[in-house]
Image (cartoon, rainbow, N blue to C red):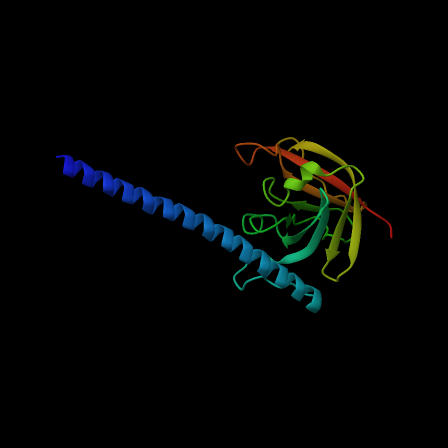
Length: 196
């Protein structure tokens, strides 16, 4: 009987080991996939600048880079490629442009959305007066300066892309440390275009 219990225990240990290896492998795969995607998106952005036309990062992609955002986050320069569309196909790979708003760096207001716990976690650290750089697909550099931030309830108000004002609106879910994602609150940063 004791030999039988010992054998069962070894089988349980073996199955737990296999399960742990599977979890580690899955985590490594997701990380590797995310890193490869950023490399491919960066390459697609370089091709976009050269050819002045949309370039998909991989042949079956549902999105493509339309601009690049650069920000100083606690002394560290960070770059994010803004992708076409702000849906489930694009947001896992980077901030997405809300269709119906102006393209980043063009006349009118542009709305960019991103996940609060990945690409747009820096929004909580932005200060009034801080500068944000946008590069459009023509290669032009446009500077914006943070004017305000506020919390909006998506059930009561909708973000408006005002065409007569050259603003950049950066939007993410709120609060930043929420356990359950996708609540109704949004954290909005409004930055005005600087005259050059």
